[in-house]
Length: 416
Image 1 (tube, one colour):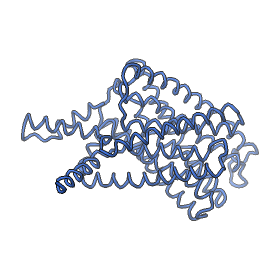
Image 2 (cartoon, rainbow, N blue to C red):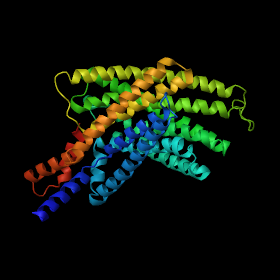
Image 3 (cartoon, rainbow, N blue to C red):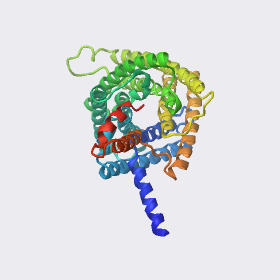
């Protein structure tokens, strides 16, 4: 009996690893956004309890990131064919974007919490800077490679479109905000390195925002023509808050930094040497951030209405997709708090605090529900593998000599 029990346990664990999808890094993104909210909270932000909770969430997030990396490596080592199956899936492949975004949240908090807390000095800061450049490279790879794969390897139908399409392009926006966090302390050691970081952050945030607006235009058309997604897919209606909220936050950081760095005292640029160049950029960044906050608020209202409509008669089953709720709401709350700091507005301070508290409650509920399902492996689902297994079985029934991947490719393409 003991031998049988151990065998069943090993088989269960192996199956969990096989179904461990890239979407799990959304949990790293969500937990990272919570640690950022504790660090930036507009009330008692420097109190001991806030600092302690920021440390708790940072190290919890770091532990999740390490564990998820180990499980991901085990998945593709034990099942090397899954990589190509996953890339050909029109939904699962998009979740590769959650990896650099999750890593970026760790770098952001490490700068504000660990480095500014006095650890590591210049060597530690430049290590984080190098990791940020690696994250930027991964973000660019996700944006260009995955969108190219969407155009050349996937088949999409407008009716099946969800806001998950945003994931590959939001990577650039998240990386840019981390660059804004890094550039300010870098100025202490090298003005040129700081300006380079601000410039790179500005370029990639506008790339990401431009692509996000194009996708959101198509997404709004899909919602108008075909209605809100059904089942757990309706939760993706909150994703537009992510690019709007994070882009606004990034632009505020860039505007703040350039206000301090400009005007330049060297070089031949007449624009960057103008006396009020930094102030002009800062004011423009606040105006654009305010516009993005307004758009995020609009999408928040539409998201609430969509969820109420979808759950009026049917209760949503808890799925791993619920983790996709945390990060967009977290960055919207963070932008609200940052606007309070820029404008000294009581409204933004109170609304940001309330929204932060609500996001924390949401994170706690999702975290606890996830733990109850991790215990028996029920939450580990990989749609691309389920499609493959079904197609493989169907192919065997029709023709023993027919490779399973042939039928899988059709089934996978039409999934979602």
